[in-house]
Image 1: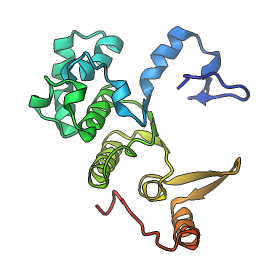
Image 2 (image 1 turned 90 degrees about the vertical axis):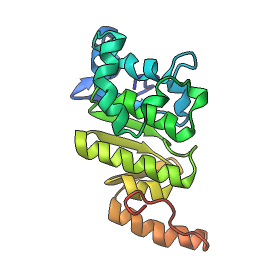
Image 3 (image 1 turned 180 degrees about the horizontal axis):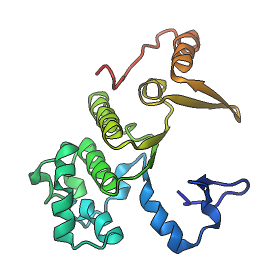
Length: 204
């Protein structure tokens, strides 16, 4: 996301080194990769209504008027499960799940190719977590977006990831989904005998 410059190595996207890119080119490219933060409310201006917040990316990047941007994004607002009555509300008037849905509407208004999701549902209760994960899966099927999921929850990783890079004690190991699920069933239950699989967006 180029929020920090790498101390070593390179970060590339579509064959381009992001850390060496000019700011104008990076701004253009940034439309194609977006981020969901662990605390989604930080993505929403507390002084802007939901309508203003979800329309903002199209106003900034596509140079649409606020009215035209909102008209274009209305089907997406409905798609993520928000209603017209939500549009006049401010972030503090929304539930955690509604805030996350608003963030998804903002992000997918630009049709990104990559979304980095940093613990996107860790602040939600289990039932809402499952709903948001299912929505993310549906949006992935509909748009072809790729996710980089950052999580400490093995159940979420099993539900959302085709491959898992497990980092432990400074080293990483790559698993496919089935191999990682097997590791979770064996090693987690060895360490914590009471462990039971929790939220699985495919099953909820």
